[in-house]
Amino acid sequence: MIVLLKLLHIAALSIWCAGLVALPLLLAKHDQDHQQATFSRLRILTHRAYVGVVTPAAVIAIAMGTALIFLRGVFVPWMFAKLVVVGLLVLLHAWIGHVTLNMGERQGNYEPPSAVLLVTMSLAVMSAILVLVLAKPLLSDTLAPTWLTTPMDQPLPVDEVPM
Image: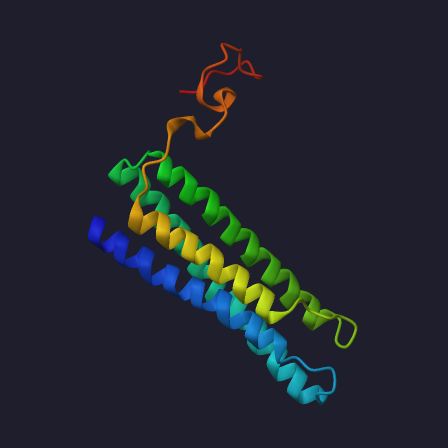
């Protein structure tokens, strides 16, 4: 079962990361001088790629990765560092989605960020994740502030007690 989850995780992650590189390049092809038919075709392509391929791959990659964390019991500092960097990848995903939406809604009135910037940021975050996963560096348990790692003996803000 773990092998199947890893396979799904890696496959979905590959599609997600490829999409985060390809979409900024497609968005850079949107030219204000294009004819309406060309613009519409390109807009539909980028929208369907983002909504129909890249986002489902992201959801599957995150779901399978979360399942693997709990099944394998990988609760070590490098994993928490990796999850922070995955959060950055999710933010990039959302930003690229925002740019995709603006390109479609504001033809000629929106100048997207440089494709080089978006691709460079995506590749940097992907590389950081890859280094953390493959190297599994020994990180100190004291990287997080003590208020995050020690109980504060405070009551819960609600009356209900979790099971």
